[in-house]
Length: 79
Image 1 (tube, one colour):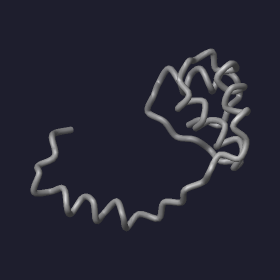
Image 2 (image 1 turned 90 degrees about the horizontal axis):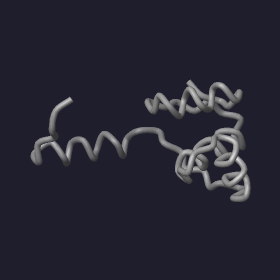
Image 3 (image 1 turned 45 degrees about the horizontal axis):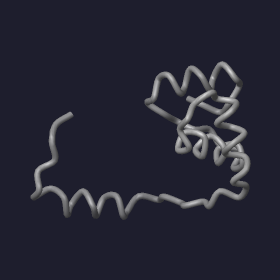
């Protein structure tokens, strides 16, 4: 991967806006604390992602190897 040229930013922004991304609010914030404890990690971001995936019954994709191994070993929805 390389750096993004400033002249490429408008086109990249347009591509991101065109993506079919749906935003979902986390329905149960207390679940994040439970997931953080279950994962034995201190990242609220990781725990919120996992809790939302559970809530949506969705598979969560990540490039974070330690998180994927940790979550996968606990039967959490990771790829």
